[in-house]
Length: 238
Image 1 (cartoon, rainbow, N blue to C red):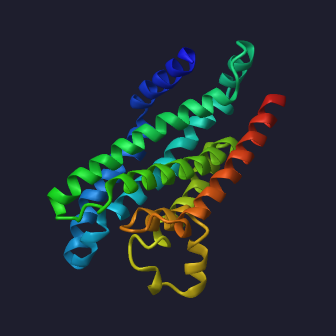
Image 2: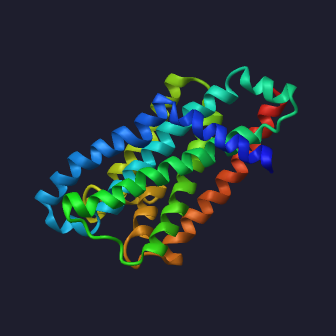
């Protein structure tokens, strides 16, 4: 247990020095928040009630789909994997430590948004903060699990960037954080329901923490855990 905690702490310290994670978990999401927060609340003042949830969905999606996968490629697509095997370290340890480290960083980024939004843009705080943080944790875990699959499947950095964008952009554009999903054509609204962002957004909304908004996220998480286990077993044989 001490070894595992040491591994998580070490990974977290390494991630702090990672320019990629710094950009995707902090710099870009917070700049987007500072710029778009003012624009959204000026053009649509009613958006103050959902600004925090909207900016958090963007932050988590970028960190999970664009920030985490490259770190996994560096481990499972390089000789680092051989070092794991040579020293008898379980292959899943790298995934777990990066997953937990990314989770902590995303929670910090989201907490910054939560604290600054009411001060800078008069955004409304969530009514039930305990349920909000629980919904946020669930949404981060599900998003990171999808990012984990991307990092384990794709072996080329260039291809990963393209595929990650194909997951990230629809998550933002079709989730309802930029504009109400009712403004979208029916087929785009249906496509948006396949991405966890729309479900996470509703789950974090006031009085949105219910089974109706939770069941799909649970289903996706269970499926991604199984897929990650299969992918890690394949890496063992290579």
